[in-house]
Length: 323
Image (tube, rainbow, N blue to C red; front, side, top):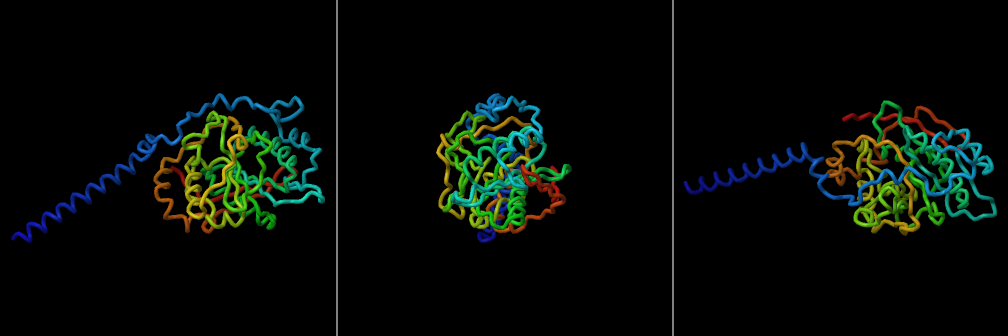
């Protein structure tokens, strides 16, 4: 009898424990957004007023940047002799360190886009970099997936020119402020280029000290393949950059980071993107997906390819996820 009583108590204890765990899982699923939002990830509140006025000269002409057209951009950059497809190479006598593909995920930020092209072509040619600018844009009805677009941009850039050996993934609203911020890869480890951002008062404390891995990062071809690219699972505004940081640290001892005075960026104003309500649940299971969710699993189709002297653009479609 004593044996059966002990066994019954153990079964009851196991039942209560299992029930409690299941209740916690259900609560985490239902309220994970509120739970994670109570964690102070970014201590510096965003200040949208700091993005309204660009603190440096974009052009010597009196152009209205709010209504800047693509024709004005092309006219302003005509003296650079850009190559078809948004590419440029230094003169033959100048030694080339590497070939850099700039991959830009994009949708519905036309003002940011035109300013980006006007500023970045001048910035990059001044550095005598062999580079090309690739824009990757989803079809209108699709939920925006930044990481998937970056994976697609990487693959399509290599199909366009297999000799690219450095890839810089770049948000369209962000502009480098310091001319010493050289657009090149670190040969040993992936590099975080955006370190201090105007809308966060250029803070380098807390999250921005060593965890921030968004905005602009640089990978060699081998480094990006080693981490299996970015996760394709984050639709809408998510934490795909934190997922990417974990992938990097899983395969490399560290992340190279620009010095704060060098890696200063101005983030242009833009409309806020809708948040993915399941992004934290995806992040919690990210480690289990590293080997199967990324470059080796990305599924998309290029439905249109656009080229001009300012950029090469891929319009892509992929399986949509709504929430």
